[in-house]
Length: 411
Ligand SMILES: Cc1cc2nc3c(=O)[nH]c(=O)nc-3n(C[C@H](O)[C@H](O)[C@H](O)COP(=O)(O)OP(=O)(O)OC[C@H]3O[C@@H](n4cnc5c(N)ncnc54)[C@H](O)[C@@H]3O)c2cc1C
Image (cartoon, rainbow, N blue to C red; front, side, top):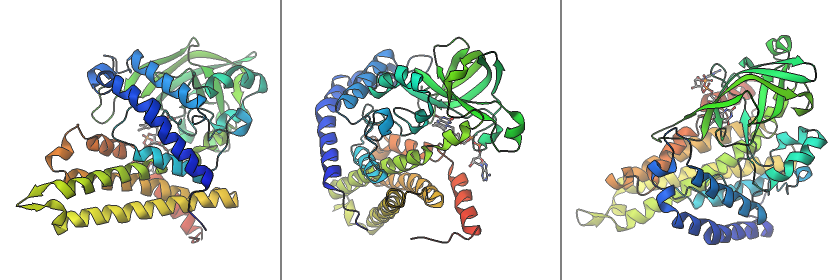
């Protein structure tokens, strides 16, 4: 097993850094007042300011032109399908750039399965691929993934949104909640019950539809602000007699749920890579500060309590990084989806990031709490990431179930 990145991966990361330095950071700096003042960033209704959306689009499209935005998309959709090890290392590299950078975050590379060239779109009919994929590939258009509802989060089989066939169309009614990017998306991969009996048996009955968010009957009612923000990314959607043509079914009728899971593991690994990178960024801030901040006539880095916090963070990052790399290596080289390992990685990396940011803030004393350094924003993000893509508890449940079924393999 060799975790040393390949020459190609090293070059991709170096190219990406240049892209961020030359294209993204100048754009951030030129628009600092818009991007770093929440009162300008969000409108009264919690949506991002249209100018912010324009900047995000510009970065997405430039990133697509440079070949980054589509690197991990399926080849049949026009992506490059670079494997999970490279994906993890690239996400780590982006995370290391973190200093609460608004434009780098999430849009240089799209969320691996809820946006961009997600593998879910492989299930689109050819005519729809011909019509829509190009816009998605170039970053001009974006997507959202509409599965969760007010009464169904972890237990996705419990969704209540119904689709009823009427001629050659499906009529959809229901409510979706927590749907990332829904206030801004052009299209939605929308999940609805098409066969309640199959759904009750948890054997199917849920279908995935490709929906234009401008369609009559598709409304984003509100944005959900989270953790101290005055606006947000996730929305609540109501579906009110939304009519969707039969040909817009993604994949097979009644088996949309398998599509929901298609790619979710990439999402979990990608998120873990970002956590590993961001934790390294936070540790670097803490080390730098410990080397300069003086109290009682000494650098704080000379105190054992501070050293312990630094050392514990380093141990945490090293464990998380190697665990994630091993898991990505396993997927890439054995062509399997190691469910237990992916759950361990997602839960561990998101929790690790919270611990590392917490210690980095503590080492900075009062400065760590100020919103100037980006540490508290990273801490809030780490706290958020313990919920989407499977909560920490659900991942522990998955791990324990595998163990109890006899999977005690760690190699
Ligand atoms: C920022 C953010 C972005 C999101 N983006 C999307 C998106 O784009 N698309 C989408 O469809 N969804 C999205 N979600 C929804 C997300 O997937 C759900 O919030 C998540 O699955 C948890 O569901 P819930 O919030 O309903 O909590 P619940 O499922 O109600 O869980 C409540 C608590 O009970 C625990 N729990 C539940 N069941 C068990 C069990 N069997 N054993 C032990 N503990 C259990 C949970 O861990 C949690 O602590 C997003 C959520 C957030 C916060």
